[in-house]
Image 1: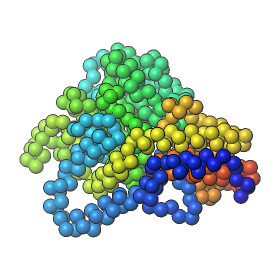
Image 2 (image 1 turned 135 degrees about the vertical axis):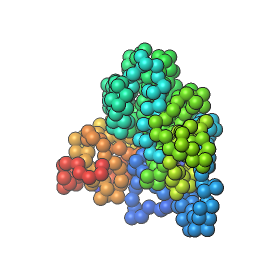
Image 3 (image 1 turned 90 degrees about the horizontal axis):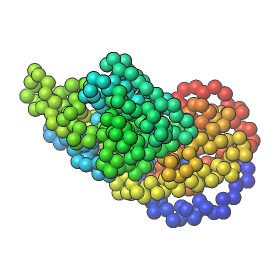
Image 4 (image 1 turned 45 degrees about the horizontal axis):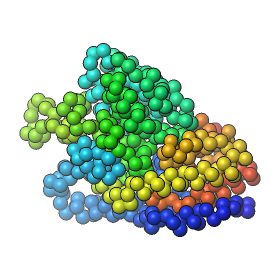
Length: 421
């Protein structure tokens, strides 16, 4: 290892003043000096989540068996309400935890297009939105005789308010965007964009996957129509944990989602022949709730609530700022470029760096006990999770990156990306 870079003890001072520092002990410990900076793809396991799943598998399920459904059947709405008041700024009865983000996005986007007037057949998103979102919207538009309009977006700067204003009009049924861009971490102006879309007579659907649990979201304050998101990134509910959907209360009776399952049926145990969607957020359910995933989400969100989303967001801003300062000083001279917005108010919870050999560097980082993730084209994402990452983690990660590139150690790795990135 090269001589450590000097940071004027900034990390030490920041960690000493960190009000969230103790929460790191609430997560399953890391081994072998590994620094995990991929919480924006998959969070680390909280001990409370492990305990909740253990309780379900070793006590509730074996003891209660089918009687457990007297309690479990209400979990999608109950955990949805917990999520709403803890991190979404939403009201009771507007959030449901169910299915995957992709399925939920399909349900809400299809319902919005079906409810739109005949002259509004256009769905709008940006060309840098997460691929699944674009694919689903394309499929819905094609199946319904509509059209998908793409906003051209700078992949480092993110979608702008002006670009959205130029893309919407009397033909627009729905606009779907990510609150935080998956590649760059660019944070969209939720309030301004939502207002523009609604003034154009369309509905606004936000993908919150990269913001929920790390950004202070205010769905009610921004008058958001629809939203979806996952629970396995900054919420730390585990791989494949169920996602959530949000529908503002005044829209729930107007929208009719396309997957008619018996869990959204009025009086489902009457086993009626005719489908009649229940009132409220429950009409957006489909099938049997994933109970194991739901208890994990519940425990994970309670931990977030204990820390407080405002404190989490404050630390997130400081962490990204600290990493940006170190990158400018130590990584830019080695050929890296900042690929996230420079304005702290325009950034989510991760910092993206571009390098022509980013794939090779990311693989060398893993072998140097720093886990980032890689995204095309030529970008390394460093995801900082305020509940378990420290400022010292950031300093050490940058130090190891400097060592890798300065010594050319990354050149020993294949140049072509393969497998899961």
